[in-house]
Every structure is written in structure tokens, then in C-alpha cells.
Length: 112
Image (cartoon, rainbow, N blue to C red; front, side):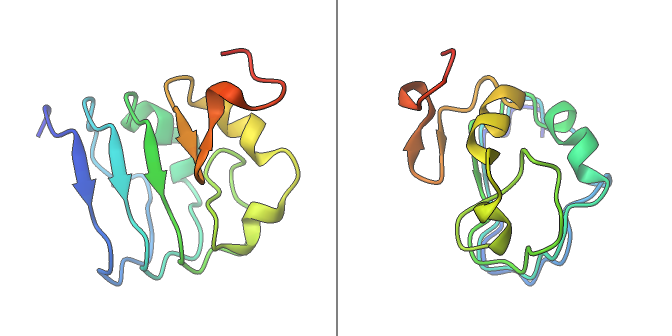
């Protein structure tokens, strides 16, 4: 799967994204909305290494409510209310163009 660019795992009752997630060097779009993901413990440290080309991450409407690595929030989850999550996400995923519908190149304080 080294050339996989788009992966849609919507509505699959997934409960976690963790370090068992495969290395997908070409993946640009990862869609995991409408699952049962409660936290991303462990995956936060390795997410950018496992998915170096990621540009779109959709985590809408999961069960995310605990403290998370600051680069993986998404609208529809309580964690997205944390201050500064957009700027931290943009800094950690330099290739990311949009987050929660925002054009990161036009965000205030962006160095893009």
C-alpha cells in the first residue's frame, strides 16, 4: 500500500488509532468520521511519522473528549475547543492545507 493516497474508514465502529496504524508514506487524505474513537494515546507521537504526506484528516463525530496530542483535534469533538489547536496542528503538519474547513495558508499567524 505504499502508493495509497486516499483512505476512507468512515462509519466502521473504529475505537482507536494507535501505533499499530501502518506506515503509509503517500496517504494524503484519511477520513475516519462517525466512528467510536475516544482517544489517540500513543498515536499522537507517531502520527506525523506514519503519515508524512497527510493533508486532510477528518475525525468528525467521534467520542474524542480527553486530552489529546494538540495536532489531532477535529470539529464535532469536545477537544476542538482547546485554544491554539489550529496553529499547533499547522506547525506539526507542514503539508496540511485545510483543517476543519479552514484554509491554513490564510490563518492569522500562519508562516505559510
